[in-house]
Each structure stands twice: as C-alpha cells, then as structure tokens.
Amino acid sequence: MTDTRLALNGLLDDLQTEMESLNLWEGLPPEPAAFESATPFFADTMAFTQWLQWVFIARFRAILAENHPLPAQCDVAPLAEETLRDLPEETDRLVDLLREFDGHF
Image 1 (tube, rainbow, N blue to C red):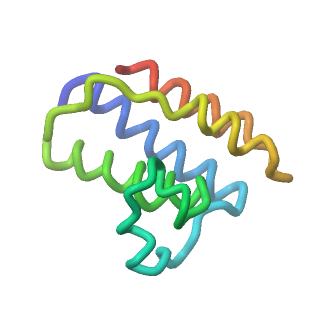
Image 2: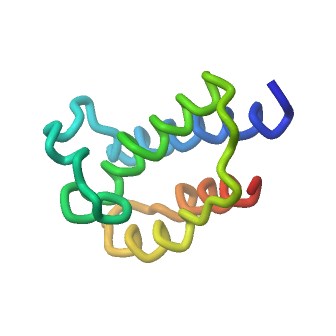
C-alpha cells in the first residue's frame, strides 16, 4: 500500500473515531431504498452524517482494500462545513479531518 493509501486509511479510521465520539456513528444502516438516491450526497434520503458513514467512508474503505484507482479529486470538506455547522456537537475536528482527506487529491 502506498503512503497516500496508508494515510487515507488512517484518516478513515480517524473519521470513524471522531464520529463515534460525537455520537454521530450509527449502528444500523438506513433502509435499502435510501441508497438508491440519484441526488448528490444522497441528500434526499440521508442526513449528511449518514452519507458520510454509510457511503463515503464505506466506499473509500472498499476502494483502498481492493486497490482500486483513487478518484482525481475529493472535495467533501466544504459541504461538511456547511452541513455540520447547525449540529449541536462540536464538529470542527471532523471537518478538519475531511479537509486533510481532501488534501490528498
């Protein structure tokens, strides 16, 4: 595994840990129909934190585990900053981790 892939894998772990510490990590996935959305970030069927857990983190874990090519870019942090600001939890670290993740692309 390359240094970039190792760093991304570590950041995914950090994202999960941070979400768990904020009680944003869910034990059960959304209903299967929620994954059929054609809307960016599944915004019509999931909360952003659900999308982050069940789509973003899950897909990147699969990409890294199966050594698939990485996407050319990743720009999740701006949406996270906008979306998470209304939560009562302190999400600055979560946004910072996503900025760091984005920085690898």
